[in-house]
Amino acid sequence: MPNRYSVPQLPYAYNALEPYISEKIMQLHHDKQHAAYVNGANTALDKLEKARKGEAQIDIRAVLRDYSFNVNGHILHSIFWPNMAPAGKGGGKPGGALADKIEASFGGFDKFKAQFSDAAKTVEGSGWALLLYDPETDQLVLTQIEKQNFMHLAQMTILLGLDVWEHAYYLDYLNDRGKYVDNWWNVVNWSDVDSRLSKAKKCNFLFLSLATVKYISSEFIPYTMPIPFVVERNYLWRSYSSACTACNTCNMVEPELSLFDIFETCFKRLPTVSLHRFLLV
Ligand SMILES: [Fe+2]
Image (cartoon, rainbow, N blue to C red):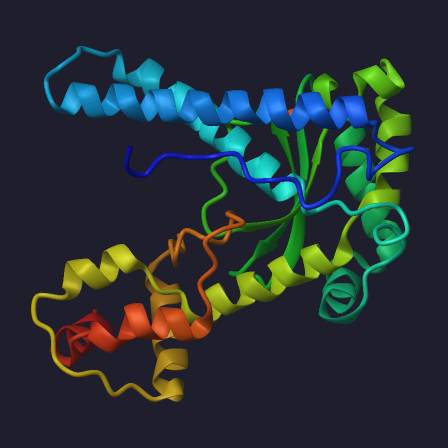
């Protein structure tokens, strides 16, 4: 079956986050809840494919709503698992570039942590608190997501997510979401968050849309593009587009595209003539 979603493996044992998140919760959350989102997203894709082939009639609005709900559930959980690490490896405070960015964006780690916790505790109903990187302003921002399919945050990359659906904590904390949020900080995997920030900034640097490359590539000629030109192109592209669709991997754990991969797969084939036309827009 082509192009379907699958549940990623947990990067640690089910009981690795105890005593903050129990083995039972992790088993149910990962094996049942996440799997249900994956199945739902794949089912929606199947329905859309059958409709395109004329093999079924669908209510496309309902199917697309199902798809967005389930695929966003899949993406958010795929980020959530590696965002955490066993106590001892996780928790504490971030360092390096992430710490600097938190300082610049929030005025300090404690202020960020307090505001993120506040966002998580006050999500109305089921949902998420997220830390995002905004390439337009080059800063970190927070958002809440109610349920999980109302999240049109074009161009922003999710760095850190906290699941505050009841299935994420009720068995351990009953209705005390606040205690769950406070304890969750003990298992945050800051190296994963830092790595996601680094990838997000690379995508922003290139700001390349594969779809756009296809669109403007009416002819292919050999590529010789120096780095300064890429910077220039990035600047111009940002001037004309509010949405980065760089590689569609920003919010996914796999597959990962390196800077080199992007050059190899995209810029190498970019036609100079069309590119000049693009720059003169
Ligand atoms: Fe969840």
